[in-house]
Image (cartoon, rainbow, N blue to C red; front, side, top):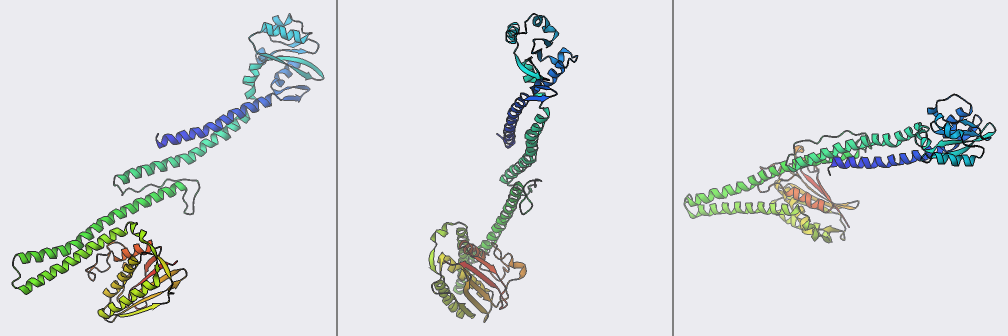
Length: 454
């Protein structure tokens, strides 16, 4: 069953309930109302007999068709006040002094006609009226309640129809738009925007109803899928370029060796050293890609355990201090963390994040520049800041430095492929923390890491 048919079926089901209730209520109300006694103008009789019986008792000249539902009217002395012309022959021959015998005789002469009789009171006198049950129970009964029935019909049928029209039509259009969009996305068409369906009910804080919010979320998903698809293309181009460069150099020097361009053992050794260096670079980049791919899954998070963050930072700072001496950098480390400060996570991966940030600081600074690491507590999180006195990162690049394969200055970072900060962001966020860029008071770059503590 299609979505369109399902909504129509739902609407029909919803309408069936008030329609059934309407009919039952109308019948019950009409019967109870018309069968009730009415006392007015000196006549006491059920409502459905009031108008025709009153005319008969007043002796008004009426057509038989108007009183087709009344067989006859007899007073308390047995006198016939009214009877249709067609029934006069049978009625005149009956003795109406005994009302019970006369009624039995009338039933015998009219065996197939459902008749009934009831006692009336008119201006202090009583009598009997004999009438056809089906006539008043059928046509007259519902005429007396036409206005009430119409009002109930409007309330129980028309209003639900209007509400279903207001609710179901935008809902159907929205679902059909989403269905069409899903089919197009499945075919790889990510360029066609999803149209927002106007609606009038239930708006949220963004001014949209639930269906519009769903359509907007679906449209946002389409945009993100398109961006991811385009990013994948850019990533493949970046990977191809970063892997092709060392391969081209290796190929060139190997062909030079094959062609005998190295005339002595010293030149052969130099060529071999270059080939070895480029091979190591190629291996590093392939390992970085494998490492980056592993971080895109959640399997590594199973290795989380509790460890001392203070101990790990102190260990990293000691290693960085020795590296700074070799690289001719001034290293400063300040920590106010308690010795028993614990954190839950992967110690090895967090250590790699710190190494990556320190290595970047060394690359983008020069001889005698400062590298400062500060560790402390901020509320319920541990805050670690890496700063340097280098040239920093331009504002036009700061919003993208955590994007995959993005390099603010590819010329000065020849060995990396632009996934170091992306990997660092992935690791920190999967530990429940955050990492962001901040200009350093030293004039260079600054990176701040915040991690939740136990």
